[in-house]
Image (cartoon, rainbow, N blue to C red; front, side, top):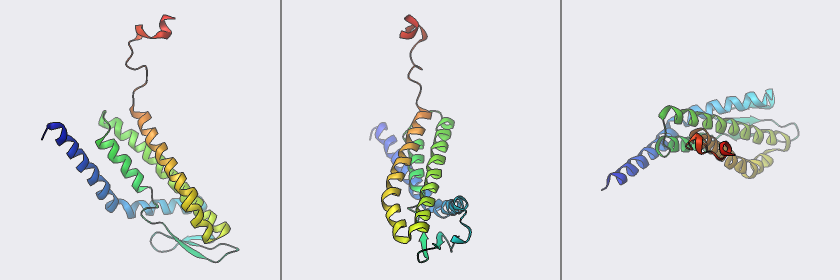
Length: 177
């Protein structure tokens, strides 16, 4: 086995450990935080309440009441763990800089996911449970893909050097002209 293959194998094992360990260890605490943020954002008072662990009790005015569950896969945890594995095991650079870039990307992903969940619950308030499911499945999925890509691109933007960083000052075209 070559040294390069060993490094790749250890990186892959580390990424898998972060993904599975993080998912099982952080699923409930992160959903607790996201559920509280959704309730604060909606500030719907008696129309949306927490019901048990990770359920919303939704009481629309013109439709029947229903419960919506914030499942582990509706949380922002999966894309955040993917970004963590990429930052830790794929990207290079100073560890502090990678940590900062990851933290910024994770914050964007989590904030956008809270907005997605709040929008889904709001649609449920306005048009009922079927509207919530339709919005969650179609619009929410597209939004989820978009904000995950946004977080990843933000992380890369914060990590990658500027285009002019490696060009010596005397060799820049703008200086010659």
